[in-house]
Amino acid sequence: MIATAGSHTSTYTAPVTQTGPVVASLESVCKNYGNVRALRNINFRVRAGEVVALLGPNGAGKTTAVKLLLGLLPPNSGRVRVFGGDPVNPENRLKTGAMLQVGRVPETLRVREHIDLFSTYYQKRMPAREVLAAAGLEKLSDRKFGELSGGQKQRVLFALAICGDPDLFFLDEPTVGLDVEARRLLWDEIRRLISRGKTVLLTTHYLQEADALADRIAVINQGEIIAEGTPAEIKAQTGGKKIRCITSLSSGVLRELPGVREVQQDREAVEILTDEAEPIVRELLARDSQLSGLEVTSAGLEEAFLALTQDSARNNPEIRIAND
Amino acid sequence: MSTAAIALSQQQAERSPRHTARIYLKEAKYEFLKNLRLRMYTASVLSFPLMFYILFGLVLYAHQALGGTRMPTYLIATYGTFGVMGASLFGTAAGLASDRGLGWLQVKRASPLPPFAYFAAKVTTSMIFSTIIVLALFALGIVFGGVRMPIGEFTRLLATLVAGSLPFSAMGLALGYFTGPNSAPPTINLIYLPMSFCSGLWVPFMFLPKVVRTIALALPPYHLSQLALGVVGAGAHETAIVHWEVLAAFTMICLGVARIGFQRDQEKMYG
Image (cartoon, rainbow over all chains, first blue to last red; front, side):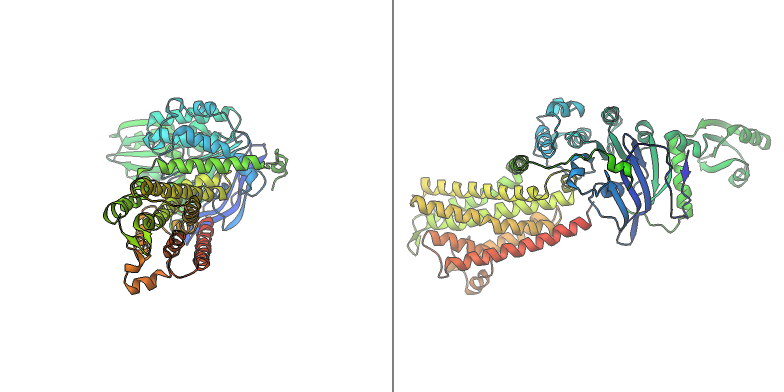
């Protein structure tokens, strides 16, 4: 089941597919920074045991949503609930682990010292050895934070999020700026959390990441959730095929063909997004005998995502994008 | 709110006093270690007062006296004030401005750390560094400057100077809330250095021009240095209680300003 919010409507009801108890929710939440509307009437729920990805481009409002759920920001209107209460409740903080985007972490403390300090904050602390192992930091425990690489630093932040063995995790862009290798390592660590039945909300602008980790994806753009569903549903929603070819037919003509969703010029070739490739290909070949370079591929999440966000941008030309 | 959410296990998270004490201790311990390893901090905060003391107290004016107090003793009080002020301002303001501006404070706030423990750690660390500076001045003075004083006087001087860390830590918190990660250190210097000069921490107070001496009456380091000088018998004419009152009032004002900054941050975070 999939639901999309028409961008012109301000109410959006999340599809109820899961049945676990709601552990975190944004209910009709608006958040403005001055006159920039970062979140526009968002409804969003995370249920126990779920792994939800909040997927969107930079400035979509992902970080703002996480900060609201962590009680770091108050909403302008609407209600934020974590474990049924206010996110700033001290009991909630004991059951929540957060990985945020940080500009600078104290660099002169060693990895094990950072972990030792954060573990002290929690009631049930994980043994340091387990935390180091779970974050892949065993060999780095004596290093000072300032001496670590980008990927290693992210793993320390991850370690700080898990060291109190909380039930609910908020991971804000956990792999931003990491190379492929480091990203895969962190994915493995997140998967280990998931396998232990933890609830995870992660934000990302990497579609691959949402696809690889999440049970459910909520696509957020310009402060609104524009689509929500399983990764497969999100892909299905925008049709599965991309046709690429060099043709003399104008893009206006191509757009008129039945079943065509999107036509894009890419250098000398044209790219057509559609639900079903065969009828379009038949039509193309019939109309243009000179057609060359024909390729048909499955549209990935990338195309689905682009189509979704472009739709919403086209309908809301006046929206200003907030930087998060 | 869904009933299911309430049904989730809501184990009561009462923290034992022992656990709370452990958090405060650990937070202070790592704040201290963090600053101790920060060469920028230790180099400027420790070495400047000690270097000045060696130069003026032990080399240039070692055999002079001011109103019956030998210079090596007199300058422990003034460079002690200078050192305490630097350690406290840089220890609180620079760290806070950086933690706030670059997101680390948010990670702390999202964790179960009691908010007060974060500030207590900064103030405690400033007091420990203040103690180290004053003890180092004493050690230099005793070994190389022939400084001798009764143990009671020594204890009172140390206690006065270390207590003097509080108003400057409060000032540091206020500054840390209204400066950014890059602007904090220059802003501190812009306040700290002229204030030290005008309060007679570099040049003995009586040698300053009259207009500067008038300005000094409004400056907290002047009052702290007069309290310290009072212990070694070189204070000005005001009674000690006046100096304590000024420092207490200054501390309250700074804490008030810091509180405004704290509340502003709860509403609107940077980054």
